[in-house]
Amino acid sequence: MKPQKLVWQIFPATLIAVIATIAAVTWYSSIVFQEFHLAEAEKDLEARASLIKSRVHDYLTTGELNELRDFSKIAGRESRTRITIIDLQGRVLADSDSDPEYMDNHHERPEIATAYSGILGRSLRLSNTLGQSMLYIAVPLFSDNRPASYVSTPAEVIAVIRMSVPVTSLFETLKSLIFKVVFGCILISIGGAVVSLFISRNISRPLEEMTKTAEKFACGDFTQRMSPRLNRASSQEVAALALSMDKMAEMLDEKIKAIVTHRNQLETVFSSMVESVIAIDRDERVISINKAAADLLGISRVAAHGKIVQEVIRHTQLQEQIHQIISTKESMEDEIVLRDGSEEKFLQTSVVTLNDGRGDSVGVLIVMNDVTRLRKLEHIRRDFVANVSHELRTPITSIRGYVETLLDGALDDREDSVRFLEVVLRQSQRLNAIIDDLLSLSRIEQESSDGEVHMEESPLCCVVESAVQTCQVNAQQRGVQVDLQCVEGILANMNGTLIEQAVVNLLVNAIKYSKTGDTITVRSKLLKMGDSSKVCISVKDTGCGISPEHLPRLFERFYRSDKARSRDLGGTGLGLAIVKHIIQAHGGSVEVKSELGKGSEFILTLDGRMA
Image (tube, rainbow, N blue to C red; front, top):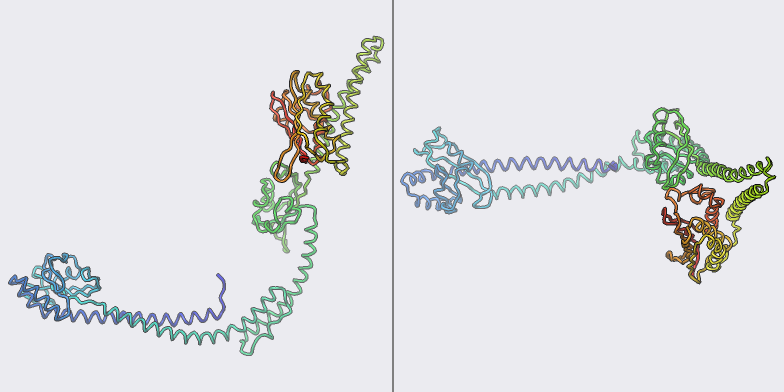
């Protein structure tokens, strides 16, 4: 709840006290007035009933009901009172205002039930017949017409005389009285408000001036002072408080300047750190996070502040480390893998206890180094060394074996010598092809990273047709047909030589893995993608296909989906890796669709347009 001003604490309290006092007096007076009026009305009705009791007794004794009803109407009209005569069964014998034949049974009326017992009955309620509040007095009529105050048995009661008058006038009078009292309360409250406002203003004005100065203190302006702003009417306590606040302002000014300087130094160091740093309190909420950590986790520094660590870091192992450090207060170093969609980030984490100025633990500090690139490079280097060693060892071992055989005496047999030398030649050619592909791949990577790949907008069909012609002889030897479907007029921003090499590599692979009589389809087309357009080159065969588990690694260096068959068919294992790097150098993409036993389709996508 927002605190209120002192003037609005004194003034409402005074006003409420005045109004409450007047309201209480008014309420008590209205109750006393109402009770007094009702008591007088009851006595009057009882007296009226006593006046007609003898006549009613006579009519009932003689059984003259018509005369009783006429008498009730006349007596009720002259006395301005409603008169009702009820027998012991609750039936209405006579009534001054209504026809008794149509009136309800009155046996259960509270005043009637009381009168049946031989005593005077009273009741104040709403009349169903007349529709207004009525005061009822029921007087028992005894067989010997004795007074109601005389003690008698219920059997001696022969009827009940009920007298009633409306009390609406009483309530109207009370309403008028309450209205006058309320009006008086308003006048008195206005007077009290003026007096209390004047008093409270004298008390609160010095405090308001001090509050304004304190607000300037809070904003960092310590040049103001409270003591000169006080007036002569200020109390001793207020003056002492102002003096203490002025001394406090001087000390705060010095402390804050020192803290700001220290904080700026730390903030500069904190923000410029390459490592990702996150400070977390004991409730596992983020205290601070630097730019490197925010970029690593893909969040905003402002949005992360104050959030629970589970909302910022969605990694179970790191969360457990934080919880363990908070519990045990022991430092920990580890390496975790943070998954971001399909990507993995390798983080070297160091979690230590965060202490306050007194040495008490207030949370933990997490320092994370992103070693993803380092791990990937290590993995690539390890795989490359293993693969290239394996690929080179095979032909070298073969060459060495045949040469040693020749040296051991096979030179004397010309037929075996020629056959062995032919094998050595093939293996040396394979070694030369591997080295050429490695050099080609290295050159493409270097030119791509240095931005030295020469590109120009030229017709695509010429490049694709040239690649098909290059592979046509090989296709005919294998008994494979190449079907070219190229849309004329397509222009692509490319290096024609490299794109031709990429298409040739795809065609060579397609021819190798196709059977005699199969057809390879080479298609180029233009794709509309919003406001831009892309050129699509696809090479589709109907060969053996590729298993789904091999597709993600198909473009890695020396990776073979079927190692035995691939070596039998020849090749260096670098063709698809070269294709991938050529397309990446063009800013495009390559994808493969394949189904085991039904063939494969390689799709190259580049920037282009229709001429």
